[in-house]
Image 1 (cartoon, rainbow, N blue to C red):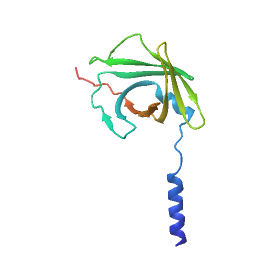
Image 2 (cartoon, rainbow, N blue to C red; image 1 turned 135 degrees about the horizontal axis):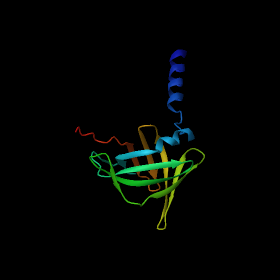
Image 3 (cartoon, rainbow, N blue to C red; image 1 turned 90 degrees about the vertical axis):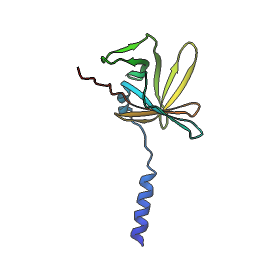
Image 4 (cartoon, one colour; image 1 turned 180 degrees about the vertical axis):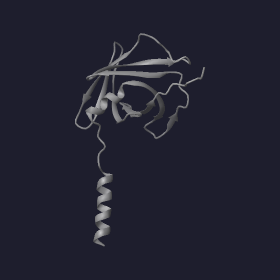
Length: 140
């Protein structure tokens, strides 16, 4: 009986482990990303199977920018000169991306980040999930 209790306690404690992001993981934000899902505060979800535009993120230290890109079949991209500048700030238990432009300012909190995906949640409670963009290779 003691063994069962000990096993259950270990499982519960390991399940309660907080999954925190490390500052060393922030370099994973660099690159091309496509949105795959949006989850709304009421639990409703919208999934994206095809994306006409993707996000390019470049982070240098704690400052970076995010830019919309339209991939082309030849491997190049169409884009404008518009970019959203942001600053990464570490708070007590998470990293936040602070955006500011001449029209607005907003915050996104990093929920998950690894080499293949990331998620952010905005101030309205909407969570956006991205995966690393893989260009379509068309044989010549």
